[in-house]
Image 1 (cartoon, one colour):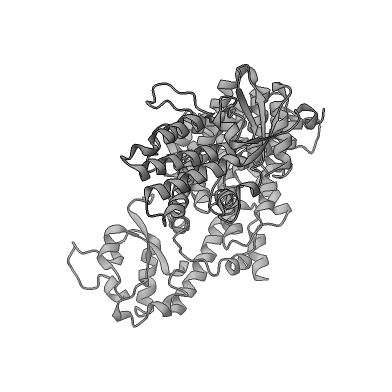
Image 2 (tube, one colour; image 1 turned 90 degrees about the vertical axis):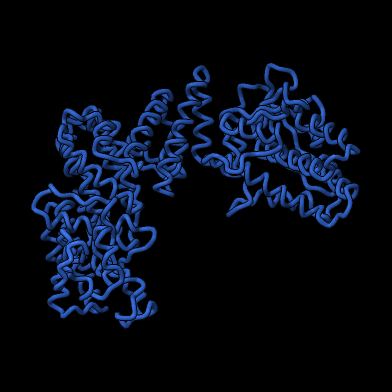
Amino acid sequence: MDPGERLSTPQKQKIIQLFGGKSYFFRIPRYQRSYVWSDRGKSEQLAQFWDDFFDTEKSEGNLPFLGNLILSRTNEKSKFEVVDGQQRLITLQIFFRVLLNIALEVTGDDNTYREKIESLRSTLLSVDEYGEKEERKLIAGRDIDEYLKELIRSGSLAETPTQKEAHWNIWNATNFFEQRVSEYIAAAKTVDVKMKLLMGLFRKIGEVEMIVILLRDQSDAYEVFESFNAKGERLNTSDLFKNLLLSRLKDDEDRAFQQWTNIEQNVAVINRYLPQFNLDTYLRYYWSAINGYVSPRTLYREIKDNTTDYRKLLNGLDKCSIQLVALLDIDNLTPMKVSSVLESPKSDPAGKESNKIQTSIKLLSSLKAQQYIVWVLCILQNWKHIENRKHVANSLKAIEAFSVLYFTGGSSSANKVEKIFSNLSHELSDAYKGKGRNNKTARSPEEIILNGFKKYIEQQALIPTLNEFTIQADNLQLTARNKDFIWQLLDKLERTNQRTSEFQLDRVVVTVEHLLPQKPIDDWNLSKAEIKPYVDLLGNLTLLDFVINGSIQNQIPKKKLRGEDTDKKKKYLDDSHISITLEVVELWHSNGYVWDEQLIRERHEAVLKRLYKAYLPDVSNEPSRYLDSSTS
């Protein structure tokens, strides 16, 4: 049946008719997305709302429609679920509350308008005067209802909302309307004139019309929601999926909604470390890990057309989000947590493999890489089948190495890499399901984990040669955004120098140090402007203990070294136990304590070559191919 056949004849209704009587009480169902209207960035709906209806040149008889309001009847008289139009209804409630707040503030102790204000409040918001019993005009979704109710009942919100974006949007909308309405009445000198203007705003918005459409059958709400939102402002895939999920799990809706809320919260934590990672990304990566690459545009249709067990799908999404957030909550990641997440304390009693996995994930996170998460999700889904956990650590080590060589410099295609991880994950999932068992060319799961990634990237010639890498990373510099990544690169050099892994640098006490300081003292005979092009290059950086760093400060090379000073309390660069720093000491000695642009750029190139040679064996079984081709 066409969605239009499920709807009643559209009727025009003024806002005052919708909110002013007892004919309509609205509830926003769980499948709806949360409150997203904003006055920032690309979403300027609040500003548009104000301009459309409160432009002083527009008369009450010349106002635009506020849009469609599609409602579904409930079993209670005058109670309706909102299928489409919830953003506008929430915005109206916030606007009404702001108008009432300002009216109360304007009148103060003057009781002349008190009865009118209370009448408007009980009519538009349906809140009992004393707050003891209430029948609110609008019940919002569970994620924002308590927060919105606080505003409607008390007229105020906490100064700082929670981390939920929807709460911030309500808070911003409240502030937006407070500012606009205050400016609107600012020129009025008396209470009477101010109240006349405010009542004019009430009257004007009350005359605005919406097109109200009722569903003929309540059971059609989910499908009509999907159809109408596909034609209007585009919803995120996660919004549509949430609607689909709850429609398929009606008999278990409370549990399904709680699981979905958990997933949203876990993804929000990951988003703090990976700003491009959101709910849509998580859904797509999870699906790709099982079924192969899917584009953002076709994801929803793929899920809808190919899912038969929505309970199983939701359980998997929920469980993997818990495991994934534990692995990607970088500030709290430890080898013990890795072992706990992967349920492998017996297979890795010394934490050796867990430590490798932690190191790889931390570097990938510092690089802001996220395509590899498809592979991690595949590993998590198949973890109970994986016998050799060491292979997993080595596969992540290969991914870490490739990501440094491929992405450093920022000009490479992330989409190609995502497709590789998706296809590799699909191959592994199929191998564990027994698909391709009779195919003589099919690889075993162990072979896919250990060497699958390397073979994919070598087949597609994605590993840069030494020469390509040094050109690509020629201008690799320390910035505020890549401090962790630079630290990880220098730590890799240090670990490469060590013959054992017994000594590990502590990120808490070891920092990245500029050899030529960003703010050189007069003895350097250099200005900040002169050194700007090269002072942050990798060649001018090392790792140093905080204590030594504080002792040598911005001195010239010779004064950063101990020389003949026998005071053991004072620390110098050559007191460091970090080998890459002691290499700089030797370099300074051999160059007469000169440290200029030429030497910095020479060391920069040398460091890049050492990094390349350190990472290459982890990502290629034939590293000599890339070294030879780079020098041919």
